[in-house]
Length: 436
Image 1 (spheres, one colour):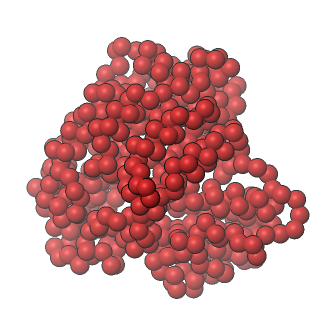
Image 2 (cartoon, rainbow, N blue to C red; image 1 turned 180 degrees about the horizontal axis):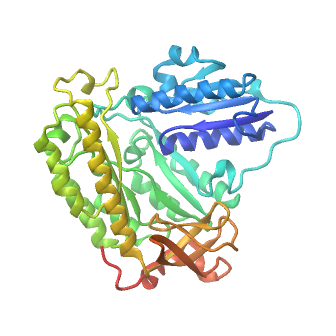
Image 3 (tube, rainbow, N blue to C red; image 1 turned 45 degrees about the vertical axis):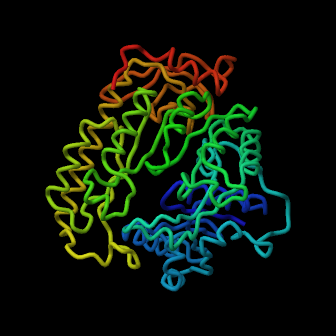
């Protein structure tokens, strides 16, 4: 059987798709393009109306290009609008989020040899994304995800430690730890655990693997978590901390449990401990009731902030959320204009961060065909050909024709480039001239 998986949305969805892909490979499935596949799994997102529309368009396109394809839809949009998705062409099954990881059931298995084991490059991924937790019990006024993912559910620490060992033994050198509300990890377990408990347990693995922490809510990125990442030889200096808005009035309307002052103190503390850290954020443009004065708070804070990249979402009504029932909606043209201004700021922040890293030496991991490297602080730079995918190296960063590139200066055969030594040496390798 030839299969294809199309994934929309967050890292949690990508982690789920990796699990589905493993199961399909175990039954003897062979990956193919969607136009050639017998089975196409579409893992949908529903964070915005645009995400819903993208899933519908993709399903219709697959059915048009491959009329014989059997399409199975899953994910948040499929869960929220099951009948609507089931009516789309060639959709033979709709699998709700809570049943997603059982999508490949016994009845789907085929006689024949077992499929290939996982290895770096599966689904085009060099790093392996592991879902530690799903579900959310926060009630942000704009968000539909608690109703599509349900209550918070965590995998036990020992199970996650075994999963890390498994994928590391398969050859993966980097693991991305993700969850719908990752900061709530372990609160539902008995006995209860915490995100910091999990990080400490994974830090003790004997395998040569490094970790990135996926998106954390600001109130969950505690001083202890920051201190742990700064001291660890395994956890990379890369944070994603959704701000959503720089106006305290808007944060209250969004039901976000922090203020701009709280957020500012957090990111400033990170930069004090980790001057070269990458810090990304999410922002919503045009939330109901957003005045020109509210929006101006973004313009006042963001350009001088230590953030390094922004994901900007024009506000989109989600039926069933508190925000959808709010009055004083912002006009579409104004929403688009404000989103454009925020994206322009985001591009300037990214440009500033890249310029600050020119001339430094960073540890990294080769991706794709070996000519792309992701550094520990989440810069993606091109290097000359000659190295394979999934190789640990150090790169000296420089600008060529306005683009940040890298020159390899060490390879993974060097015993100094284990997961721990590469990171602990990064501070010594980084130019003292590097500033933010």
